[in-house]
Image 1 (cartoon, rainbow, N blue to C red):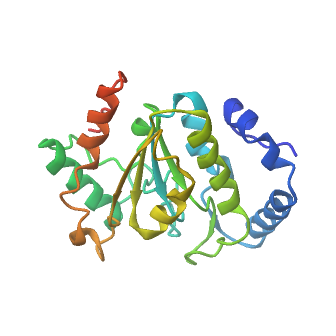
Image 2 (cartoon, one colour; image 1 turned 45 degrees about the vertical axis):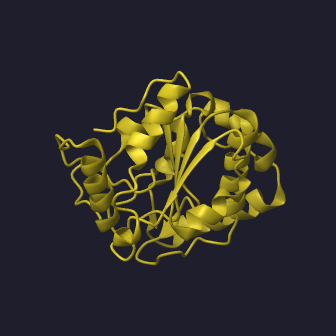
Amino acid sequence: MEVKIEPSWKEVLKDEFNKEYFAALTAFVKDEYKKGAVYPAPKNIFRAFDLCPFNKVKVVILGQDPYHGTGQANGLCFAVGDGVALPPSLQNIYKELESDLNEKLPHRNGDLERWAKQGVLLLNATLTVRAATAGSHQNHGWEEFTDAAIKALSEQRERLVFILWGNYAKAKGAHIDREKHFCLESPHPSPFSAYSGFFGSKPFSKTNAYLKVHGQKPIEWL
């Protein structure tokens, strides 16, 4: 099957594109776009991969679903398009970022493309969603596809940082070799759980400390 995705990822995931589940997933997603509004825009479905080639990945942040509100989802987990109001989880991520690094963000841009281009794979478990219907594209094959991406990173790369916020991300982290990679786990940044241990978890400084120890350039989070 011909899939438009960044070349290094296309090579790494080539076996997935020929599996029955992926053909069924493709048919399902195409039909959903025909029937009504689906997010993100088709060109942004694989944006997380396109901005962060396989061999450039240094950090992986796992999300669950794209945002299902108009104009929000842009293909990167937790991110929204430039000029779009920051959702509560992203507001809390920015609060923790400022507290962790003891600096103020110089902007309120929620796109997060600047992170992706530095090697932060901002990967949702499910890459599409029907408008106004949270979780509507779960259990149609996306999870198997994104599991394959995580397994490939775990097996073929070394010394990556995986940031796992919330129980869903922690469960998806079962595919990660913890002997080779550094996993940071905490509650989800959602307002329902952020005060249960997300605030104060310092994921950004801990990530950079690990990268520095292993001779890699830290992420410019701000």
